[in-house]
Image (cartoon, rainbow, N blue to C red; front, side, top):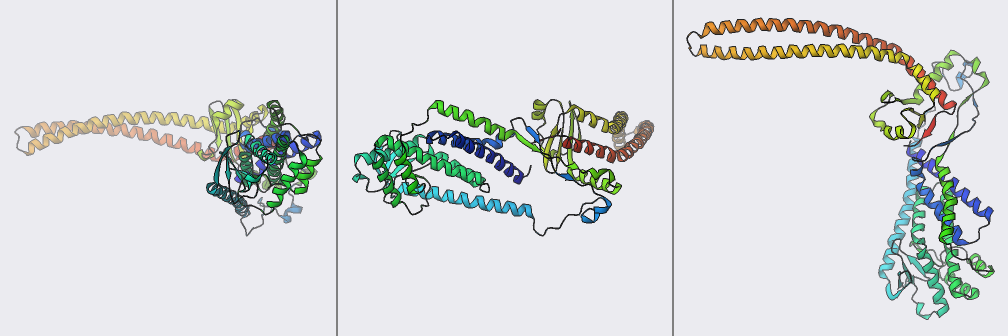
Length: 523
């Protein structure tokens, strides 16, 4: 699977989850912001887990009926298909795949750079702030900063609350409302979830659902914290006045990254919600969280498992197509099915390489010992249907005969190799005897008496042994020549039946896709 295909599938599955939860919240008319925030948080977690889930959950395939594809005939060959069986493709002056990857990386890079810059600026603001010596109930530090005009919570893993420099002038009600608002953010870990949502949006910036998810997480988190502040202040009008004051002071956009009390939404909308509400919703309980996750989890799992298959349907004019169109289709199929592997127990055969890095043991444990993997148009498929496996078994009958012939040749070669080993051992003994004769010759050369006769007798014996070895080697050479001729026959038969077997296998695989018996997978 290509990177673009992976991103497209992730974005589509994530969008399905976002849309499903958005519709569910709207139809169920959930008004409690804590419940809605829990739902959107579950959506974020599910979307981040979708790439991992698609590799472990079972595929849930459904078929989509495609429009008929007309058969290639002589009458339409001029519109893009030649009678030689080759499909003419327009020549693009721009490598569109790399162009698309470049655009994606540029968009992702800009958003991640903006997020990183905000995090750095936030860290510097915190570093320049002054500790007030006070802490929230959660233990988070409360600091004062002259750079802040409204309260804000900064920091992802160890958040702190920053207050503007006039905080000492606040009355008790304003102080309690602000602290309750920020405490609510920290207890729910809103800075962390919003950071992860920003990363998620940076990776899937090209889909509107990622932007919707991020905006909803921020919007609903502020509503939930407003409710927490209202519960502490017990005076809607007073809290609305406090919030309006901060909203007016924070009208200018900020570049730092954090959860600010006066950063989200239009002032009139937030004030209207605070003043018009008749009661203060309670925060979500553990049971509520469990129910929310229980509702969101099946949606995420379904989005990760669903897989649409869109077969190509031949038009009714197929019976009128010419032999030239069949040649074109066969050529196209061979291009599409450029990899396959047929696994039957411990036996494997097919057209694949180690670069494919197939997780065979994982597939065997999941699908059983008999299955077929193949790649078509950049998508990996698995087939476990018994009828398809039977058709492939029939298609490979000629290949099994060639394999049988090769096995016989291999046995003959093993026998020849064994004979060659025996000859080599005999030759080793002769070489050792020849070395002894050479030593005797050296003694004769140094003037040893009576040594020449013994050396001549030893050399004669060695020569006789060498002639025997030469005879044995000639027999082995004859056997090897016969084996080579048999191997040539096997090679010729393989060349003869190979294209036909490959074509038959590709036909079966194409048919499996059309019948919906081949299921797309991710590795």
